[in-house]
View 1 (tube, helix red, strand yellow):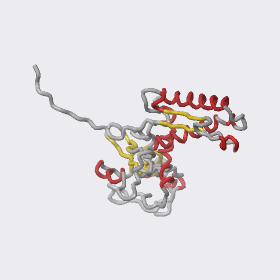
View 2 (cartoon, one colour):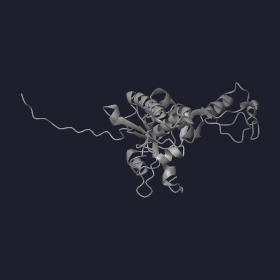
View 3 (cartoon, helix red, strand yellow):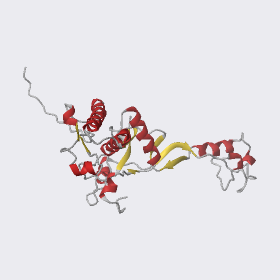
Length: 272
């Protein structure tokens, strides 16, 4: 992923997760028709089922036999190992539904996952968090005792980009852009005059105000969280109007995730 020839713009829209995941899904076998290649009887001096040579089927053992049960139980424990992409897609959906697109899809439990197929320590994660050469960040999936398997990273591949470093910021901008595009369809071929400008600005401001109330935008006051500009002399010239363009400028201060929690402790002198 680090060696992939992606442009800076492409990195802003991409995220990488590591390692693969051992899921709770087991392979599905047709036990009766499953052929036996080799087997070893543990704790048996002389094989009492020597007739079941390689090439025989499980059905030849008898579905109620001890050997049939041992083999089938062992195969049921062969869990499927998958790339993290499907689990991450499910996590994105769950976080979007329960908390919102602006919540980073990190420090969240992955469902239907036993554990990562490789244990990664905090020290090992440091080199994956931001590569000093390429600047690409790899989001690590780790298991924490008492918490389960968690996604422990929230960065795009542009790990050194202050504007588009976090997945939640990138995805929130995408959501806002698409939502406003669709909701402003009514303005196409409307008179490009002050009435349309006021309606457009009010509609967008109302939408962003709701997102600010939900905690998606940072700022004590709405004017600190976003702004919307549209109109002649603000975002358009006379030439823009003559050429049929309505330019709308939108600024957002998206709430960013607290990636590092720094706690400072000091010992106080006894005062009484």
